[in-house]
Image (cartoon, rainbow, N blue to C red):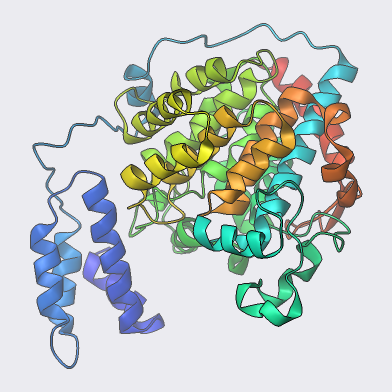
Length: 452
């Protein structure tokens, strides 16, 4: 299939302005990956400088982006294939003895589901906000620093308020965990394991998407990948074909189920995460999912945050941009006990990434883990107060601490409002109990343990 044909089909369905924006996003993605895109940038300026865009020049720009040249000064090694990733990862414990009694294992898994839900819900009203906007709103409500779900904003200050549909996500109004893609994906992963078994492949993941996820409920990289799948473009090409969002956060938010179902097995968790990520992401987009899956698997056995981060890093390339960002945050967090100082350094070095990119948001989660001192409320609050993809970051931070502490140790003020219920768009899971999901997850843990 010729690239010009595909771009032509996209133009027929979307406006030319949207196509130009996608070209800009592709140029940005290639620049971040180490490609020389100066010529393409200049050509795009020429193609869009007239009263009407020059479509022939736009096609030429699109075709040039199919054959990018790497910059010789790019200092990172970021392979795509799993065997090449493993060749470049640091040494690490690939397996750790878990041996948790069934009641303890259930408590930890239930804590993980609850923790992820609470962290996600905390960040949901301010998704996409900057730290400055979050702080201004909370200070007006006398609620900075955050230590509970977001409060309603008084009616006379709606300029600081939330979207109109956010009312049920705010303090005093919460009745359950509402639908969110950050929670859809662990549910979908659980159903995949139940239906397909422990030998997870990208083809099986893709089929789950097509049969159990509505297209309109997936976004950015996942939406492009979904469209690719419908058009017959299968993994791994589905994740990178005309997909400028391939290093954004979508895969990272799908990490949890692979870590939860592999207690003490970070290597296997990362391998399952890779198979999942391959449908829609490459490079740092995939590394983010592998990092957190491995970290979560180890969190059933170890409780030292430094050590857990090290195990997560041991499953991704040592010289990738994500590893550098995580190591920076660990160092900065040790140099200052003030998370705001750490965040300022994250923003200075990594704030150029899109607000839903993997690297800057993973840095915020690691910051929250380092400064949160294994206190659940403090950790998820820091993850959200930093801004950017707040529901994703709160969810991942909450999942880690929920796994470490277990359900019985989580503060009722965060957990009780959920009423053990969650809504999802995943077919067959429109209304289900979190405790049931935890029980079903434990069944898959046993199944995986007898397979590998």
